[in-house]
Length: 93
Image (cartoon, rainbow, N blue to C red; front, side, top):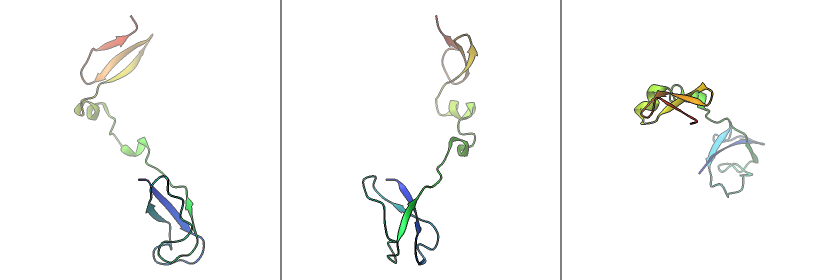
């Protein structure tokens, strides 16, 4: 279930004084009122985690530790292995 962010349109209780989050099913309609005080609210776009926020989670060392193999383009349809198991070079025959 996704986590949606909402912002109050009217008065503000402790719950909705800032943006607040609600865990909802995908098929559920957006809230139109604060669940605590009943004041009008609307759903807002929120930021999301990007690959950059993972840090070095995709580094060759981490990938190899998790059992993955990574290849880097070497040119002319050839790819060189940078980490993991498998052939050192793959490409078109």
